[in-house]
Length: 285
Image (tube, rainbow, N blue to C red; front, side, top):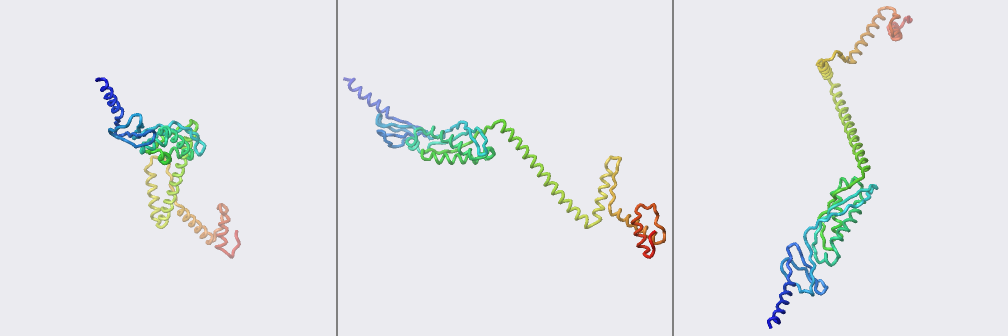
């Protein structure tokens, strides 16, 4: 008699135990009633009818996915191996269960193809120097395509760009040539600035002869401070011109006084001309 009452009680207890569901804060349950979508439940305690209702649990936390290495041919025909890391989470559990069979696998495959297609449109230099922009482009494309699956792509980061040894050596030679070019340009700009300053200094000194004389004395002072047995004494060209004018004046004076033209003078033609000018009425000796 007691067994006949005990069996239904046990069945009811088992049914209640099978119908109880508890989900934490970061999970949701997509409930189907006889195969049709009914509702999204959780978090906390709720009940489902066994054998009639079925529940699929979805984790709402951010999922970190490592995108495998991909062989990419850049726009300048350089083969590189690139891998990345993807961060995404489910924002709509209903779409994540109904619209796609396995949203994790689908997102992984989509990330691999998007990585190859986006990097293939850029040069190698852009891959190495503009990673932030490439990361944003990949993230926007993935976020747009996975929106119908109820998935939000939070971030995409390119981790490694592996090159062949020959390509690494070529990049090193290119960088060295670029540094040499910059050094030559800087040197040329320095020479240009120095020449401009020298022109300005020459203009200032030409306005006042005392400035040139002071610069000359300063140079002589600097030379005297050096321990050298050889002293270079610069002679201004103006002094040479003055001596030349004095010599020509003395020669003309001798010619006017009646002296004959000596044959030992080196520049006989110039002296003959001076003789003719001083005595226009007499023949040249």
